[in-house]
Image 1 (cartoon, rainbow, N blue to C red):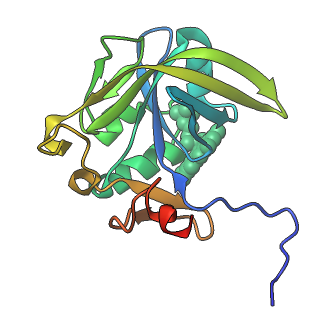
Image 2 (image 1 turned 135 degrees about the vertical axis):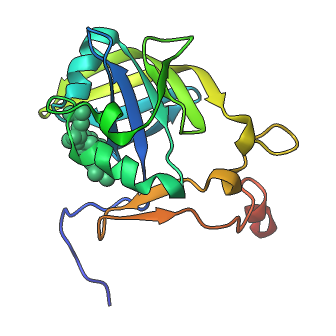
Length: 186
Ligand SMILES: Cc1cc2nc3c(=O)[nH]c(=O)nc-3n(C[C@H](O)[C@H](O)[C@H](O)COP(=O)(O)O)c2cc1C
């Protein structure tokens, strides 16, 4: 027996994307976004309502995306419930930022994996700002790399957002191999 929920939309799990931007005076801000993701080999799409971050994006045309780990839940959620319009979120959260060498956007030192992006399109649709960024650099702290130099998710335990109960969840362990496991049914 299946139950219908009409147009209630749940995509599970959603990412926890921390978007870093500068305003026109060079002040850094970071916001939490779940409605976004990869939309091409080196492209990131974001769906944003009106925020300090959207004001910043229109000026700077650049942003960073960081992925919080299990230890970062409180800071990540804070970035989603406070606005840079009202408070200095960088100072209050205690994180440290440096300017990306590639784009006009802040890199948060505490988050080990960061995509540094330049905005390539920005459209307003249904009252939302749809932003596409091209990744020009990914910087990764060496502490989360494995012996082959690849990102090891087990080392920073990235979190995801569960929209069914508004919780954050930690990613589970490896349970299969893409482009390979299905071959047994061919
Ligand atoms: C888990 C979570 C997910 C969120 N996802 C989005 C999102 O995808 N798009 C959006 O516009 N706002 C989203 N928000 C809300 C913004 O993060 C929030 O309004 C924030 O205060 C904006 O900060 P700013 O004004 O400093 O830019 C989310 C908040 C949380 C807690």
